[in-house]
Every structure is written in C-alpha cells, then in structure tokens.
Image (cartoon, rainbow, N blue to C red; front, side, top):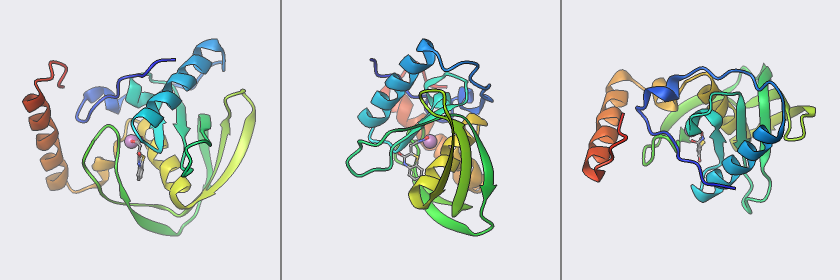
Length: 173
Ligand code: GNR
Ligand code: NI
C-alpha cells in the first residue's frame, strides 16, 4: 500500500476525461487499496482516480463516522437522479481550504462494479448522494469550483497559485 499524491487545482490534469476501467484486475485492486489509504490519510469522504492522476472511471467513498465502510464504484453510471435539488456546502481535496455551496440532486440511483467486479445498484441520499455526484464529476474532468461564478473561481485560482508559490512547490501548475 502507498499514499498517492493528490493533484491540486488549477492543475489542468484535473480536467482529463476518464476512460472506463477495462478489467477489475490486480492492478486495479492495488490502486483501490492505495486510493482508500490516501482518502483516509487526507480525511476525505471520497476520492476519484482523476485526483491521483489516473484517468480511469474509479472512485472510492466513505461517509461513515467510524471510517470503516469504504465503498468502491467502478465505471459508475447514474440511472436516475431526483428532480429535487439541495444546496450543500462542498469542499474538495484538490482545492484545500475552499468551501462553497453547490446544488445537487437530493437522491440518485447508481449502477457500478464493486471492488470484486460485481455489478451493483445503489440508492443514495444525503451526504452519500452529494459525494457520489461530486466524485463522478471528477471523472468527467469537472471540479466543484466550476459551478461557482467566474469571479469566485478566479479568486480561488489565484489564492491556490499564491499559496503554492509561498510553499515553494516546484510542481505548481
Ligand atoms: O472530503 C470531501 N468532502 C466533501 C464535502 C462535501 C461535498 C463533497 C465532498 S468530497 C471531498 C473529497 C474529494 O475531494 N473528493 O473528490
Ligand atoms: Ni473532490
């Protein structure tokens, strides 16, 4: 197992469209284990492969308080989303320190392969539904700040770049 590094907004690689996972094999199982470890280490409730620079349709999620219920979604597809929307305060491990309101469907029905390669259907509401939609956006190359006004987004972009310059990161995008 290994901790993976998480791409930071505005890294253009965060806007890559992920391809479907072709086979749930040893390589994918190892990636799942590393992503779960990385998500827990970063205190996140979800992590998309896109965020660790792997552009395949795979996400891990754990919204449990004890952080003992990891959920793996491979090649997830939304079968149904409620018309009803709710505004939630969102954050993202790729945009640390930034929180803002995003409107999402309150309920979703999702089909995905699990970590064993079994096709499953999941009904979600509350924080899980929000997290699933946030993670699936990452697989499409979309970061939550893209729902905010251009003014807010540009302020966030500048702040992120400034913070990274101050930290002296050579890998700043
Ligand atoms: O840890 C996370 N918290 C969170 C809070 C509200 C809405 C979405 C999220 S997902 C985020 C982890 C992350 O960046 N996943 O891509
Ligand atoms: Ni995120």
